[in-house]
Image (cartoon, rainbow, N blue to C red; front, side, top):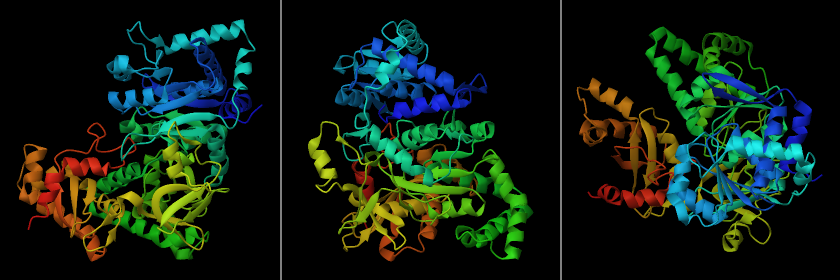
Length: 594
């Protein structure tokens, strides 16, 4: 039997049987799905898809938030030898239609009436789509209920008990397992073809990052349409028997952590930024003595940090102080995270060194890695027992990394994509003749093989004075401020840097009320000179350690968040700089008028 994603899964079903595989919340409580039930659902949905005419090589799309039906559908599609095409549930109707048409999807599995509406809006423009399956119960005779699809497969299995086994052996390791569409920061998204072998290699190399066992519990909320969550948060965890619980939504993660009490979680840096802000806000609300104890504890944790990172105990008095801080301070932080958390795993964007060190000082380890959709995704990672903050770690076993003459990070390994779907030119542009994939990121490698990213190659700002500036690094520094929500640094071919700043409106309003100003709207808030002066002072304080040419001279406050719906950010929260600079071009130009 070929080594494929679905066959690995079936081995886990046989191994773990009645143990809990998945958890979901319904009716105010979490419910369990056993490995046996999980396996049966995959088998029945797979055979149901075959009844719809899905055969090896067909593309089947999934448009859904995280829920048990997502991995069931994914593994069912793969079991038929077909190809999964994930679509972000936050995508617009136009974006959904583009992906469905570009991938030539035969079937789409959607979660809700809201997602179904996106497909209906496209209507006759969907050239290849034949059937739509809906997970929720909706009143629409043109679609197939998910439960009916499952029942169709169950009946087929009862009629032909050997049929599923005949189907699962059709796919081979080198077959395309999925086509994942990139976020498209510079144009229409491209379909990244990843094979079973690409993802399996990444999964086999990843356990050195953090130890995993079937006794672990993960809380899943990062979209499964994102390659990071799909490989690390789904396949890697499944293959190690980890129980996966699904958060109700991004907004309920804190509440769900308390209910599920995960031992590990996978996220992007924005979650950790918000967690730190909530912890600090809570501390500042307390009495002075409690604040003093908290910051004393963090200070002790920072002093002990070099010894812990080196695997050493540290001085006795420092260890005794840490034990006191653990009881008085750190235990409360850990309890808010469920009380059992062993590791956070971070990826998808650069993690602030300050945030990583803050949590580590408090006894909460964030393991940062790096990769791209095209590399399945992990290229490098810090290890749970070998961390160097400010870096993205060392290459996974079997992964080659080097720095090109222009500073670009190149990688070569069995996890590099098969190519872009029906786009040979883009594939040749990304992978050179020697098999090196050009990441588009700029970085350095130190003598211990730790890699540090300095910027995106295409995002580097070159000022009119000829200075190269990394906008991402500055943006990370500025968004550390509790009053700043989003930042876009600007200044290519200009004599100095400027930035668009989105405030944390609620906090800024409270600050202005203290100063006697009560704005009636966000627009009135950002146009007031007092708000500008306050925010500009915070920006200046944050960049005191930057070089003169890296400092932002002027800012413009925006009265609304940058959103995916407005085309300003991607589903993975990356800034679409060209879109934003075009939209706010006049405002940015005004910052250069003396």
